Image (cartoon, rainbow, N blue to C red; front, side):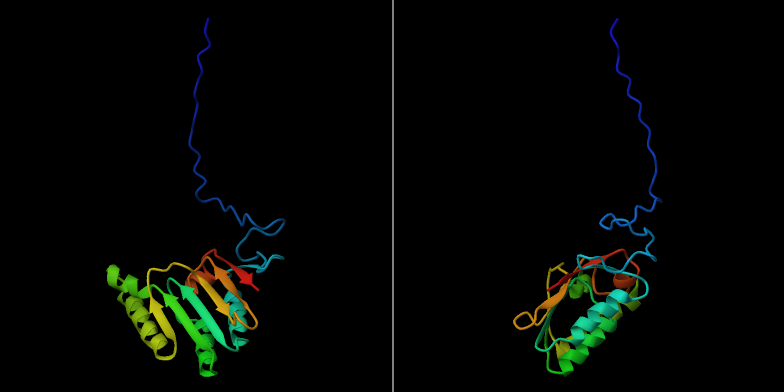
Length: 172
């Protein structure tokens, strides 16, 4: 008598299960209680704007150059701090892709679309801004004299820096 294999399978829906942060060991798994920075210089976005504040503090120390790339950018404290740095004489170079979004997609949210257009107009007054097909997200500060910065998984928008689960790696 031959034994016939029996295949039993069932699907379990765990889509509502909080998997926590896989790269953090022995820490709280809730977004609101997770440590903001681990020992390796990895920052996690939090609703208290601590990532925005940390990035802004680094930008305040810029003396010569700020290079920034973000697919999207929005008025946040980060952008205000970059504007202040430019007024102090720091050269600012930006690579964005928001203009491509405005051209390619019919955004039903006209307020958001107008905000992007206004932000791009304002940025181009004081900074060298290039619009392209880039999806990189970083800030590099004073690369020739006192290098520092961040590599992000998120765009430089308020929602991405505070509400989404995102990380930033400090560069030095």
